[in-house]
Image: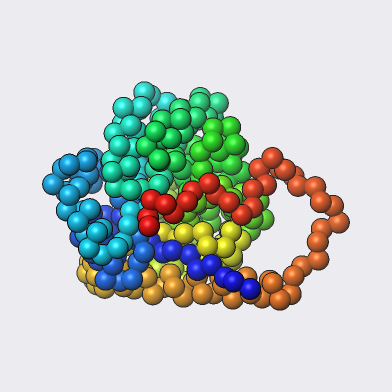
Length: 307
């Protein structure tokens, strides 16, 4: 039986202070297939990267893409708070189209999920003009903090979902949920961490932004999570660690992350092979708890931007 090895990318957050042109070249040297680009800063403390079409950094980035073959799959990041942010996401989508990206990652602090669905629907409509699909990230300390809730919003708005192994682990996501909603997930962000979560929101934020663990070196069920998603779902290694980066340097850190991701993905492949060889008996009832959201096998995102 044919197997589909996923494309593996390097997220900007893994090397947050590395300019995008250099990020592309570091990723290429480590063996990654693509990178994520941060076209909008998340915090005031971050350095802003001007990737507007035609800017010097944009031109340098696209030269690196052309010379290495490492593409840009996803752009980020916008936190939807209920204010009028349309001009911001339109600028991001314009940059994403020029960078040949496919998705734009957003999260939400807005607690009115009806209003949020409307905002996401407008983003989906706008994104169609740029070839960009909004993807909603489940984040443990934000408003959308479960995979079923994200799937409801995706159904209502037409967006897709970014799955991050840190946040999915912190909110207790099950393999069954990943199997049920996996068709809505065009990208899995990969990292590891301790089984026990930080005690408070500040701890969760710190862990998320600056101290994750190398895939395979923590307590998360990474192979099982990958195996629960549709085979071939792209994986982006989002593993920031200020301490490890300071100790190893950019290239060595990227190399280590790629080797770790390869190992975890290989383990997931063995789980899939075992499941094919020894399939579980079918359930007594063919009914799904959420039949309208049971979307195996397709996530609506193609690789045409990355050829």
